[in-house]
Amino acid sequence: MTVLLVLMMFGIFLTIDHFYAKAKHPVLRVAPAMSRQAATAPRLKPSLVGGFSVPDNLRYHPGHTWALSESPNLVRIGIDDFASKLTGKVEHIALPQRGQWIRQGQKVWSIVRNGVKVDMVSPIEGSVADINEAVVNDPSLAGKDPYGEGWLVTVQSPDSKTNFRNLLGGALARWWTEESSMRLQRVMPSALGALAQDGGVAIDDLASTMPDEQWIKITREFFLT
View 1 (cartoon, rainbow, N blue to C red):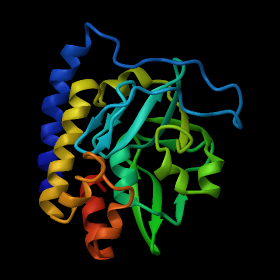
View 2 (view 1 turned 135 degrees about the horizontal axis):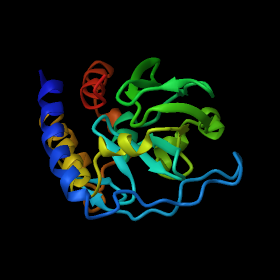
View 3 (view 1 turned 60 degrees about the horizontal axis):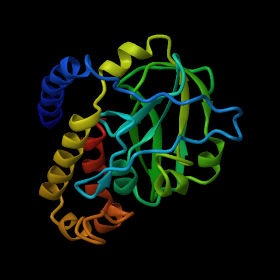
View 4 (view 1 turned 60 degrees about the vertical axis):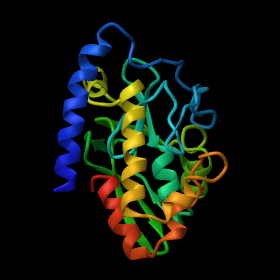
């Protein structure tokens, strides 16, 4: 029921965003990476909302993944700051294979912590062009720098323009993150102190403040899985 209510709210605000975005460019495009080894996310415009970083030049899926258009059909994707802090110190990240077709809103990768796996959904549809081998070898990168060195996958998306219309950006993305932060505090009272540290910045490992059973339930709710 919670997921249905969340998706209904998302649909309403997405409709508003569609008309608002007609007069603006919803995504800032940057030049594609020159090579797999050199691939990093571009410089971002940080915005702190509810204790979490929400760069303005990305688009977000309500399951807390992000997308960035690098060329007409190439899209870089990863987890947002909310997801990185909620998952905390992960042991392993299982990414899709190169060439695999992934669908928007469907499970795309798994994150393992304390031997427990949770899934996350893709913000975009298309064929996996590349994966971040650095994150496979060092999963902590996704938590330390989710919008930079911690990116996860690049996707060749032939219908990326339509896909991006289904994502949140700007004021709606900030609203969504604020709402997620408030929901987290309601279901996890211990997060009140965790989100109040360092001038309102959430601690890096919110998972450490709850037992595994609660963590599984909360992550599945917020990641829409």
